[in-house]
Amino acid sequence: MIATTITHIADMKIDVNGTEHVVDLKITDIPRDERRQTGRAYVWLNDKLSAQLGTPPDDFTSAAWRRYHRAMIKLMNEVLQGTWNHDVPLVASFSRTAGCSCGCSPGFRLPNQHVDIYVSVK
Image (cartoon, rainbow, N blue to C red; front, side, top):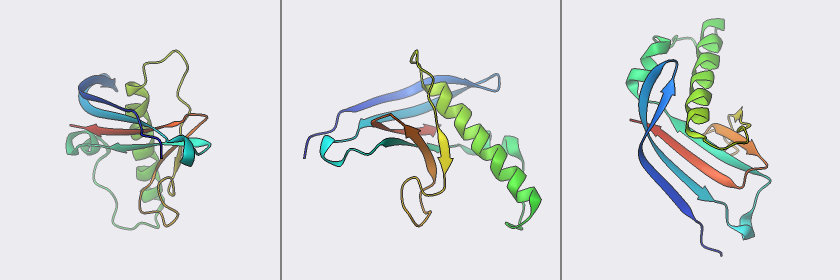
């Protein structure tokens, strides 16, 4: 197995919806022997940022829950895009099964990127 390169940026400042937030960013290369066609990105929001969306509805089958969930995904994508400072825009599509086929680790698929990105908002 080829060793992965890890880039870790602690206390990176990003702007989300006109508010500055501090994130912990880790980027790892995918080893060539297990190279997938798409990288993955996982975003964890803090309570302050999640509170902007309000309280999640109790009924997970309701239209209100779907609206809340779409807003959460949009917010996580904005955080992810804020960490990407390259000339080429980051294409990311949300997937419930990004990390595991059972859906326990949802995240974003990154087509044509051979890195995994972990973002944690502090």
